[in-house]
Image (cartoon, rainbow, N blue to C red; front, top):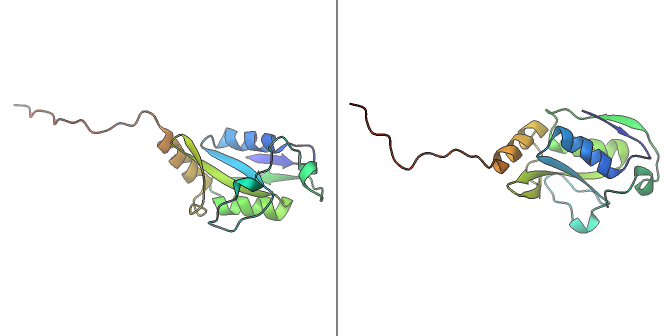
Amino acid sequence: MHIEINDKITLRHIQEIFSDFYPYLQIEFYNKTHKKYETSDEANLIYPGKTIDEIKETHLSALLEIQPWYKVADVEREFQQRFGLSVQILWKQKDNWEQTTGMDDFTLKELNELGRNSSDEFIISEPDSEYPDEE
């Protein structure tokens, strides 16, 4: 996946592109950075309707590549180092979106799969009774 980051793109558009590739993951933008394995404070969440030029003083236009084998921490670090954007990746756990604290070493593919499995409504369980033996 490639995302073109420029002054006119909204945070929501970046979120939509990201979620098109990873439907059980979500990316949120914050005005303060967090360290690896730490949560981001909801009070620092940036409204997704804002454009990059509304939140950044430095103006940069570049293409960001995000591959399924990239680790969560690496993607978050890339946004910070290249664009000065503090992001937190969230994963879908049942019906809730949870920050990936403690999961920063997972790849996007692994975490998306965990979210899919957690949200799967059709989980097959073992039957209560055993099958009778055939004679």
